[in-house]
Length: 68
Image 1 (cartoon, rainbow, N blue to C red):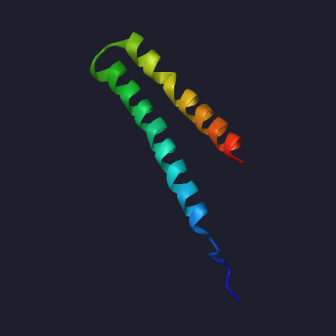
Image 2 (cartoon, rainbow, N blue to C red):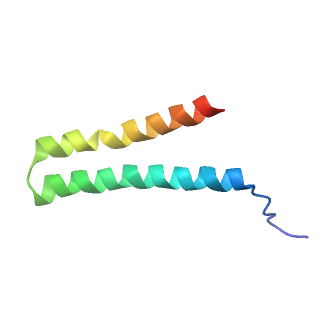
């Protein structure tokens, strides 16, 4: 008996790829915000960019729920 069964359809794989891209975009904006704050010494821009990850993730959740 197999512990894990892989019964992923192509739609599930495509959904996972899209989720990975969205998560990567949110993580990249966090890194960019940290870069702006510590390297470029621009705290106002860092805070502005720091608001992007929740917005990106909220928009992704909205689109995902809208498509179902």
